[in-house]
Length: 125
Image (cartoon, rainbow, N blue to C red):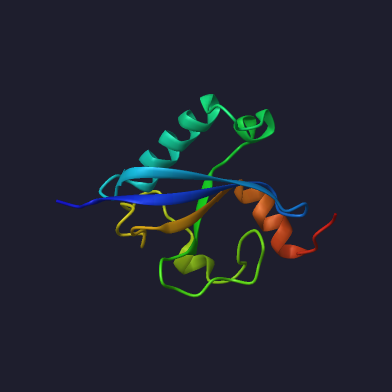
């Protein structure tokens, strides 16, 4: 049986404006698929108290590993732009197969926004 873990999900609303909010999930089952976890998060943030409406209503469709416990962190403030093939979670995989473990930090964002930001990674204030 796979243990349940704690995962931090960084809801990224804007890459350019560095606009994101972390949400912590305890008791995450690593046997569930990436798609199941994504659907769970979408339902949760839609009704989560204390989360501003722009974050609750934003379109999220992609998750990427930002940081693993005891690993190196990226210098990028919102999400690292490298290693997409390895770090972006694919929908058919279980969370464990995708590399999620206890205390993993994930970014949840709109893929279209991410691809646009990657072409011109400039932050505005």
